Image (cartoon, rainbow, N blue to C red; front, side):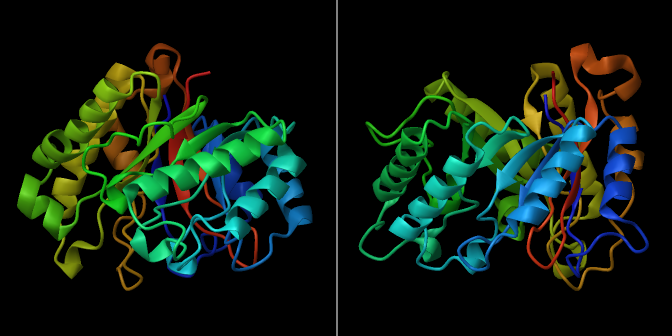
Length: 313
């Protein structure tokens, strides 16, 4: 099981006064087992020397990696499904196909319609076909890393089913749950949000795709001051999500901070307050699961996302 608590720093840097190694050590002290590592490939080049040093450091500390080189959809207008995107993945696969430091490839984060390559991707079927082409290209290099496919809600696939002929083996399905004003108005807040919106989606997907594992890749809420759910309702939703993940051994990565850059930051430090209220008990082992911290690190000119996570070994 992977269980995560994360935060996005407003300046995309590490906490004041802390080095990357110190943050990872802090994560390790909580039982960290993996890191979500991101870049803005296709917009800026990856510093592969830096990437290698970070991968080595994490490996030495016993941390595996979810590698997400195409993180922010706002950076990639008209790019998803393009030949350049596929070519960059082929180059990455050729470089890392035997690299055991990487656990998952996250193929593209949130490919909504603004990211679709013109004339190449025009509908949901086109999204699925683009994903299949990219997975096939990666596999053609001899790379067999498990590939994490993006949340389907972001490209409005409300059936959660894949177009015939586009599913591939050794892939996982990401889910993102953000308690937006629309979500809380439509499905309720807190426990209701989790059960009627998030869990209902997972159940529908798993019933139709029993061969695919699910990773809750992101969950959280934007700044309540911006009119979204209160912190109490966010906590209630996450407590219910954590308890379900513990009971069912599902992978889970929780972004505790909202994405509002003007947020006051009052989410900071809530992990230690909320986790003890859940069924997740690090000292008890949770039937073999280990608490941890997933740390997303920008490999260009900035550093970012910090998350607490667990993964059953």
